Length: 385
Image (cartoon, rainbow, N blue to C red; front, side):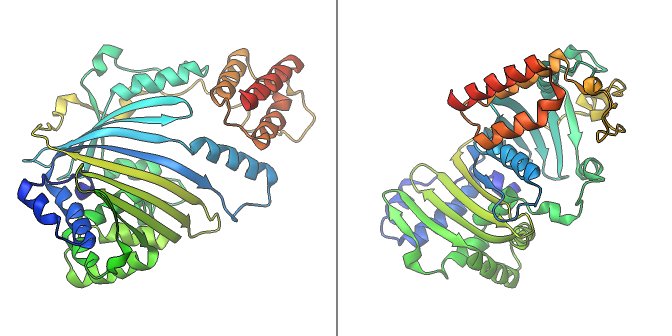
């Protein structure tokens, strides 16, 4: 993670002039490794494609629902800036997550010496705004809003294990994520490995040089790196390769602007055969900014923010919905229906006929005739907007 967070090195005039006589393969290698000396930069990550592939279930309704969720995930974008303290290696992240027409600002400080993250408590106010907007004001906060200013929520490995407890998989395979793996590309060992590849596989277009890494090449690099015993990111790469049946990473470096772009396409190696396409960019910038780890008095526990959620209506949980009981007890409230219409409105122009059919089928038994007709009209608008 630390290597991924570092950025491109400043290239002096003599180095630029010298690079003019070097092969694209050598320039590509240098552009990746020289990223390590900058201490700031801008980054972005965009989900380009997200499909179930051939791994769909026999449950048509479940497949339609999954397709609807995936279509909403496509276009999700994370943008932000990163700064790393040159003395302590502490990292400051300020980013915005855009999803479903909403934007969620997130600020975080990473203590790389203890693998601990400190999430700005400002996120609480934003999240509670979303909860209330969707008709549920039952969550309460123990401290007042003003008490959250300058506070941070501490998150470490133990916290993550606790949050993941009871999920389908809490094993080390949780580490098979893309971003830590991409840090592999900025190591000296990887730069040395690039020299063993076919020169003609590196394409140069002006200041940009690109190469598409295949699963075979990345697997071959694992063998090379293990022999060198120098690369700390091997485990992250190994986890990703174990989790996918196919993967390509088209990497483009701009030797003039310090911008690095990675277009990742992969297929998950399990029954679901999920296919993911994403684009990650990073532009290095010089920074002398210091990053301060929050003091103990500024750290709060996540549990402190929320009171016990006693008002949750669990009448659905134990009900036998297969009987012909009075369904009025399950009808959406006016606030819930308004939130549903707002959700549909936010998806204008993004819904397929399958999505619309799913909405109508799913909510039909929970709406009055008038509400159902309003939903029909809203869905028609969402498709033709």
